Image (tube, rainbow, N blue to C red; front, side, top):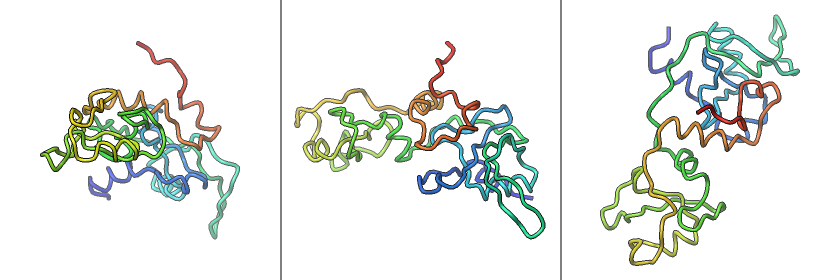
Length: 199
């Protein structure tokens, strides 16, 4: 029997590395048939999906054509699995590099550039600024160098919007606009990336 920490970890450790997405990842749905996460998309390596099937934690909804073989049997690799037990979605959005870039829609909060992103402390740490949702923004390298450790007033720069802690709902909405590079056909019935959200 897994302890509570390992159960949580089991359900929230998703593939984030693009290299892992090239090898038959499984889309993980909650018991209500919605993805556990959109940011990043809840994907497991195929090995984890098969392990979860054998542990009777998930039901297979769709499969790849690819087959894996053990000494005794062969079976198709799951492409979509659904958890047998409903997991309550996390309300608190973790303060991570990916989530900060996602909140800022992968663009510099000073000039709007979309490439060469890094981070900037709006109030520099050397002036007492803290590392928090409310004081860190995505910034392109040129803007970051231009601002350096000065205040916005001293360098004549302006933020496109005031940084703040995003809600889980806001991150889901933004996450739908930035799907991963790899989307398997069997996932499309469960992902509504371009669907208009109900008001």
